[in-house]
Length: 102
Image 1: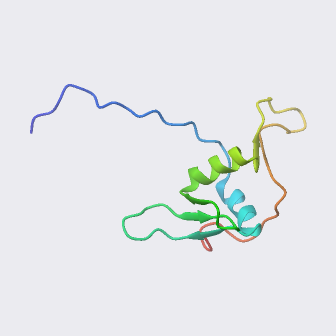
Image 2 (image 1 turned 30 degrees about the vertical axis):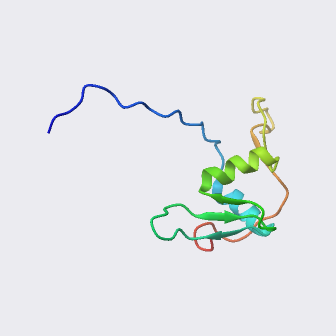
């Protein structure tokens, strides 16, 4: 088989936010969000807001939505002596485990 000397163009990848998705998901689920297993050839879970107005596919989409909607705030300040700084998660509450009850 003949190989090409050209390199395939690499699509730019958005830098992921460094958050614990399991923690975020527990809070969203407590606020009424639901999830659905992938079906057919789909490989990522589908997440739906309580009102059904937002349907997101994949954990990255949920995290991006959380930042864009203001559910999460990305502070650009360095971490202080008291451990503050970084991402702050809203006060929705939590409970359950991610993965078992998606």
